[in-house]
Figure (tube, rainbow, N blue to C red):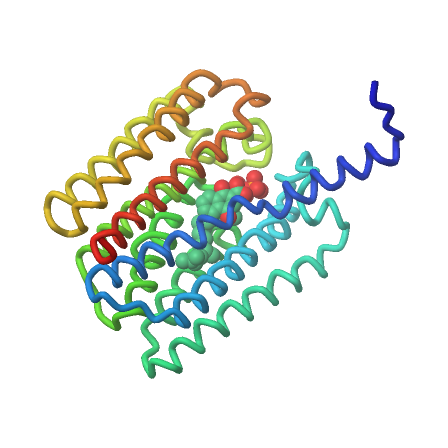
Length: 306
Ligand SMILES: C/C(=C\COP(=O)(O)OP(=O)(O)O)CCC[C@H](C)CCC[C@H](C)CCCC(C)C
Ligand SMILES: O=C(O)C1=CC(=O)c2ccccc2C1=O
């Protein structure tokens, strides 16, 4: 039998809390719009500006870090995070420092986007990303706090979808295309699905803090029933985009993510009203987001390399 001392247990628990606070898997939602938008440009033009791509990915990660760090600060003011032990504010007890670090991330992220805009002598990308950040602030910051009204998924759709993917495409081509916007809609829906799935285990805390998340509004059962329909919509859009010629036929590879969609739907339908079992639903949704995005990306690259 393994003997563990209390201090080792405490350290392991603390490490777990820090990992939960920093949410490493979540950063795939920042990378995917950049990857897909840039690869739609590559599929259409056979060119990829690697420096711009890397700068954009790093900036997107920094901007998402700001969103998450400042989320803990704003939520500490409403009392919604009292039971959230992995809130950065609860973990450190240093609200001002946490806020300053978050704002530092935002500053660095925007600096990267400004560098792209300056290199291209074109402010379009900067305007699109500033708009995304504005939506991100409106989600959680005063006086808006639109996430508390259940509007987060709509903001999330536009920020990561048409705006995020559109900005990545524009940074490569300095033009627009229907294909990139169709890809934007697909990424927008899968990203909003992650946010939607993050509410199931928080219904009680949300009601107590006056947050009317979509799951508080719909109830967990109807919320769970919506998930297969949203996954199905994504898969239908992939078929329509590929058959309609907006994306390469190889994009149909992304249909394989249907396996993740089935796992996600089954988990939601089975455990929707059991917080202890449903707390990790958002990671199932990240799985669907990840595989649909990666396989779509593969489908965008393969026609040029085969
Ligand atoms: C912070 C977000 C969700 C967390 O919400 P919640 O308060 O329920 O979570 P906790 O339970 O952990 O407290 C995500 C909010 C997303 C937002 C609507 C849109 C963000 C836009 C980004 C700032 C823009 C990113 C640009 C880019 C990568 C294209
Ligand atoms: O902590 C979370 O639950 C989320 C964090 C986050 O950055 C994000 C971004 C886009 C969609 C959903 C989410 C979260 O759910």
